[in-house]
Image (cartoon, rainbow, N blue to C red):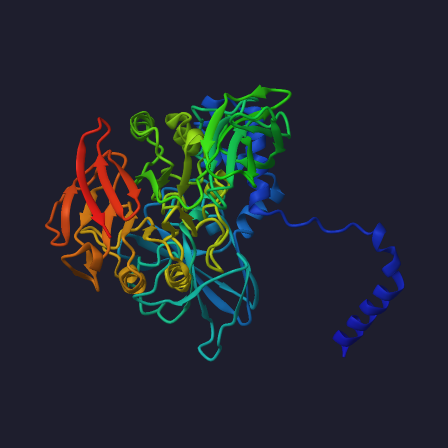
Length: 594
């Protein structure tokens, strides 16, 4: 009875004084982890020299926090709601040097339990929570990739736990037991040892990329190619019909908000101009170039088979040098292109790329089979890629797909996506411009993001293959189905039958850091005729890393490393394929005639 009276009085007071709420102090909005770390980074830039930034310690970072910021870092990293009292077990990698500051402070106790997967060993910390909201803090101020994960069990064996994810809002659940995975950006890494006391709990998986959310210790980087007012990193891409469209991307610093592209057809006196769309790109730990502008212009209604000149910039900072490109003639069946395996923003690749343009000036476009850079969320890696290659990709169209290094640690390939403009004709449910298709002359190219779910793209692949009348069919994706290091049976089983049914002529991949060309394969078996099977190729644009070299019966030719590049010419019903080293020596070649 007393409780009801208090509630009733509270409701009455709320009704009487509701209009006075504007005079009542409102509780401060909860800070997010990003807001706290963004603010910390800004204060660090304002206060400390680059040399001092390199000496930041966990303790020093903690001393920079006010109470509100510290509370956010201790409670807003992982939040979920439970319907009954629970025991939370937190699995922390034993090789992480510094225990997260909040863990013991908040009441977690280290146990004698040990959890293991195929690569890592974890100590187990536990705490009991009442029903309601469970708040957990950051993994640490380092970038320790095997971040912690948690499991939840009801305190009473008669209860059943219902979990409502809050931060992050999307959550994957597993059963805490052997065979479960903990990182959904590496679901092949399975638990091998789970104490019986923890078995059967609800396992909340996470991603290794969460190690970056509060990374401040040994975190700051510099780019050797900082931006300026002058446009640079000019790149030609394609998002439409190659006979009538081209896209152009470039970079500037953030002094001016506008960018323009001027272009004119060869022999014409008319100079046309288009404004760029501008994207503000931030890499908060890039201390000498935190923000840049990425510019994009899409050119449409160009004349087929025509040469165009262009330059980019603006009236304040001036213009880039003048480049040119050629649109594809209608109904052509003769063209050539070059493709690369993993490039990893390497100066070795950059030097080779520039040599390819000198040696093969008549090629129509370039392709890269993923892992363009080593860390896709470090903009200085992208700066190196474009810095080392010079203006090669301003002169010839570049078409790429992401690899696992571009799509980093489960955080997606958003930085990759902002670098390029590609067709938005991929499968539903897959991020746009990552998987796409284009026809060039008498050839179909399927550019597939194999870092995305395999089955989610299978129907789309079949639709592209069944609807084309192209003479030649190519598929490019990062992970090679056939290799001796880590074969991909899931790709062979899902996509191999489609490549067989619709006769894909060649698959181009990278990832394993060696060169391979297979015999024609049909039905997962070697066949003796190019007309009956698909050739699987794999290449590398930097040095190799293989320590073992077992036999591969399906291989025609292999090399343990690079750098190498592949030049393909389509001449009506004949394909000429040559693999070169940087000096122009032919390392492999074949011809196929239909």
